[in-house]
Length: 66
Image (tube, rainbow, N blue to C red):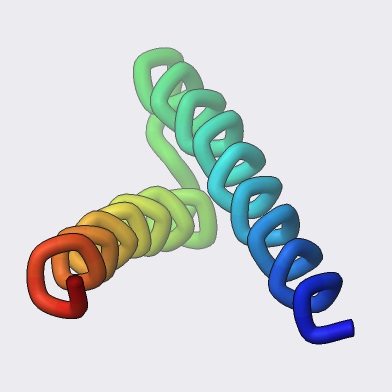
């Protein structure tokens, strides 16, 4: 059962990263056409920060834990 939960968590994380990538791409296209609203600009910044945190956590898990 624990293996199933870990697989489910990995799939959910992958789906979140993929969907945020598509939304970030959409925001970048919108930014070229018009000025982003406050909520859109906030999401634009938060998604970029989240990608930085994911990259840092992956680097830590690869180089420090192993």
